[in-house]
Length: 217
Image (cartoon, rainbow, N blue to C red; front, side, top):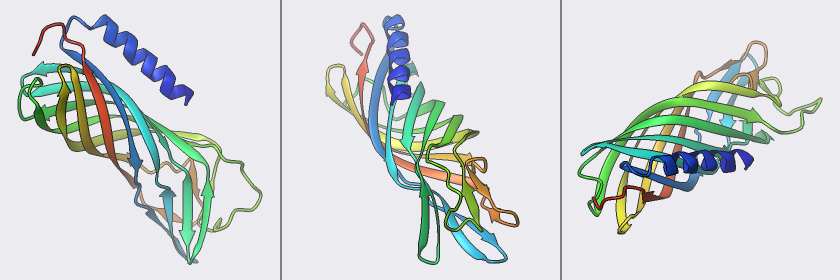
């Protein structure tokens, strides 16, 4: 939570400095869904990854051209680790931090009442295991949970709709897919276990933004 507050302060300071330009600042929340990846070895098969959790974030955007905008954003996700096989499940507390830059392609000028958009971006994601390590963990024949962190490159794609609800206030709903290599430092495969290499994270979000431009657009 401290990371969220610190990032929002940074975005707010940058927004104040840029208020003479066509900038907007916003934030919102959503739910993080992460389909599991396979973990297999000669003893059997399991599914591992991260549990569904809440996500919150903030961003600073610049309207570059009539149909193109750019955004720098930070997101925080509650991402508990999980491992399951044959009706048995093991879990471990965790979280992650995402920092990225997005290019937004939208259907019309930012000042209109409704706007459809798609986005593509990239950055990095920090996965953290925050639980208490134990001498015995269920399903340890497949993988181990560790109290550490892993930094991975991240790609993002998404789409959404933006509504104007007041002269300078906007509401948008969107869904994002964050794609990273699997963080094997946090969920470490046991000897002889192969774990899927790509992790996808689907995040529907609702966000509110404020237009900082001085002139009416």
